[in-house]
Length: 527
Image 1 (cartoon, rainbow, N blue to C red):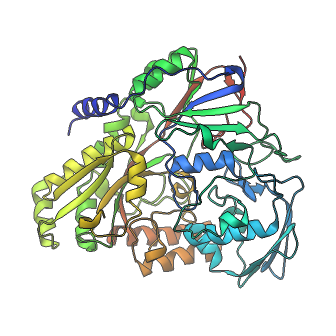
Image 2: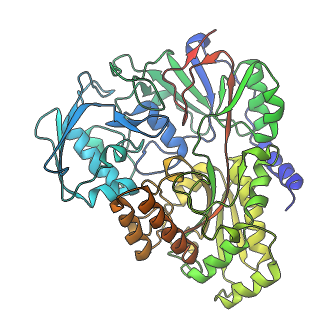
Image 3: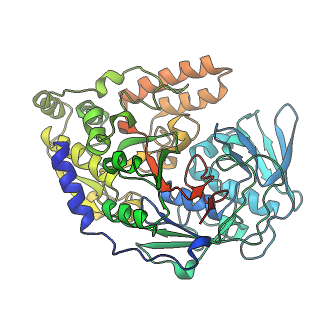
């Protein structure tokens, strides 16, 4: 599929869903209006890994530790910690002034329950729990963690945005079910009665929030000082509509500026166009390992061999090739954990006639495959169209179901067969710390029912994953990563479709916009 034809298709699809002219928020000088990449489909940062929920979580919830822009963990909700018994006994002491949005004091028992729930779904948390004997709250302010072996990365595990502290009553929710309400202790409150599903999310400054007294603001670490009264998310599927609203000052910040518009926007002195999230966006074709035919690794390998990363990434980011990276394996090329082993198979050109024969030889017998493709996110819709076209060319009987992103988030949790609402493939992007380190990498795990959507079962990968945590230094970790990438190509849980760095765009009157994922503390609106 040619990029020009794809862009016409993408714009046609999103324009049909375009929002009307954006109305400026009341009290605009104290309100930041933000155009997110998706609507907020879930309020639970444990139940889903969707980036939009992660971003909401950073506003509403707080974490015991937090990462700075160099991904180093610092105390956030904790005043400090002590480590004894050769690294096997940790005591975390909560700092003063912590309150939930319902007015209740944050207690250690709330945090202990939250950690246990988080660790049942999050890969970094799961790795930590293999080394945990007990998590208790001996007092209202102390969380005690007893380990069966040292785990030096404990602070980093509890810096994950998904380790979002919540009241014990919510933390007792089955992690496979969603929490019923958003009660955190973070610098913003979720305003439930102003929520308009599909278009609007509102956050209000939490006047009772007490920022840390020490540290330097960096990413989501340090003092979270709020300089605005409200943040309004207006989800608008059409890029041209957002650009026009940004030009008029009706939108202050566009999370994911359309790359086709970036060259023009860079020339406008009223806009700041830059990359804030340096972990990038890795395209992902995710297989469901429970349903045939992708319970067969040989068939998955044929799909992997058919995908040309450069062609797929150019479909969305081709207007600014400097943003694109190819030869992508498990991690962002050029970062310490990235391996080059086997990446040559991700390059084009491809021999579709041969791949069609390979698919039959692998055991594919023509059964229908259900592919979930989100039309409301232009980057996902672009990769989905190109990659699905390839699936058809190599002989798959494809039923591509076009949905809005929130529906994909709900559907991908289903383990049912395809005739009962299940699926075979969905498209997404992998972002965040999992793009540069295996510790939180959701896509590579092979722990069956405990794995990310698709539920691969790969004991070899699991053994290597555990071995990475035991490696004594960077050189030993890199050796394990080479082995992990070899296993990945042999038994792929997903196909990496290349990556790009996503620019964000905001009005020049916004200052002190944090590095990393979108956050609304520290920033100032100077008009």
